[in-house]
Amino acid sequence: MDSLCVTQMISKQVVVPNEFYALVVAVQELVSRNWQISITHIYREANSATDFMANMAHSHPHGLHLFSSPPVGIYSIIVQDLFGVSQPRLISV
Image 1 (cartoon, rainbow, N blue to C red):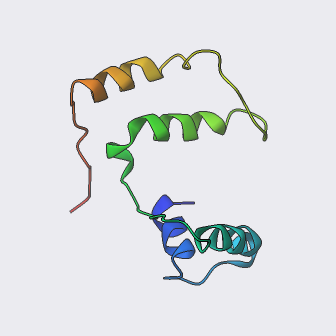
Image 2 (image 1 turned 45 degrees about the vertical axis):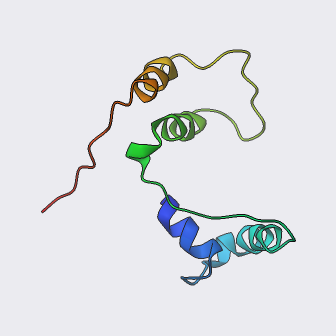
């Protein structure tokens, strides 16, 4: 599922499919509580570490996973971020 679609579902911009309805309603309830929160879509090129971790999650069983150190492969992403290296957004024209 694309993160833009999830952002739109939470902010009630699109119809929520039945398979995600209960989860989206639970998130909407949390967002509506008395606190300041902002739901914003960020392209994966601008959020490479999160994209790396999300892709890595597909190879692990569901549940909570704690790491005593950053996973191998994320170090270079963190260093690139530290030095301000940007990732181009590839689009078809």
